[in-house]
Image (cartoon, rainbow, N blue to C red; front, side):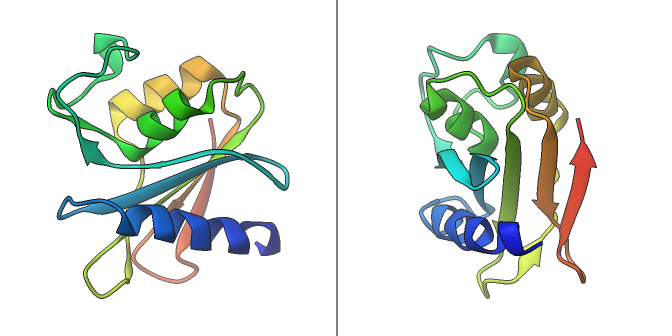
Length: 126
């Protein structure tokens, strides 16, 4: 978990940039190196995203934003997704079905996401 600590803080900072009620931040990394980061945001045009990976027509999920910003091969990388409420407490941030398909498509190896209770971060292999 030590390797995640700094990445959790970065994901929280990304989530705080969101103007949505559900504040979600994301970090893509390969071991200690951060490859990309993103947060959920309204967007009227997602030209780089195939429609089958887009769940809501006028928003872009944090995971998708980070993948698009990466502009590099993500095979074997890991992804961390956190959701915080207005009190900066963790909430469930498991990626939706469409985001999971996109994460698998780009070759990300492992997903870490926030949950409501201790240990607050859950790990799953893709």
